[in-house]
Length: 253
Ligand code: PGA
Picture 1: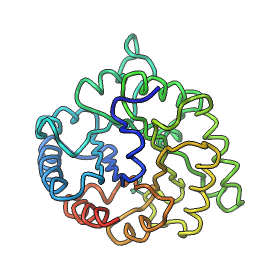
Picture 2: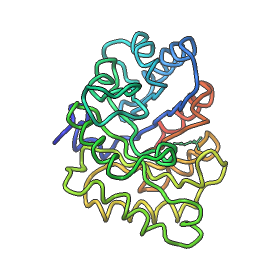
Picture 3: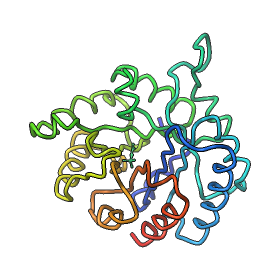
């Protein structure tokens, strides 16, 4: 199944910047961020795709600030597996699409640590694809697994949820759990090794991103790794100034 958003072959050349605001922000900040970020994107190459993922409550606010042909895309941070029904508090993929999301982050380690299982992630990916959302599927090892040098085995387990899916229409974000929000990052060779492993397991054209303590200081070095198609940024994406600096750096890749 090919998502309506994903452009296919030309995405080989695309650099992705995903701004994951997690549970931060308010309507005023979301609106001005979306407006200004879209303006700065208009000045750089269209091969840089920036996806802003505010809390779902603010997706419509962000959308309201963007022109029809906006370069800035919107993403959600999670979705429910069902399209509708008795699921109090949950938000479905078609609802996210309805308020302007084109992407959805799935399997983030913060959702996994809140109890989300691989089986649940699989059905969410299917739901997202069925609604025309492009899933950004997060995988990555814990610190214990990293220290035990079992990263590949952990990735194999998490990637197994993609079995049977046409993974060309997904984005994969390699996010070591120990690098998220800690200021620590793996070395360049470690990122490259994990990315090569992911690509060989999937055997597809799915772009593989890196996430975990990315900021304007280390972005250039990370994007210089040939296997890295883009980044998923948490904390450093919250400030417009940092984000604009990262757009300028990524535009040079
Ligand atoms: P961080 O978060 O950039 O704050 O480390 C990344 C993420 O959670 O995806």
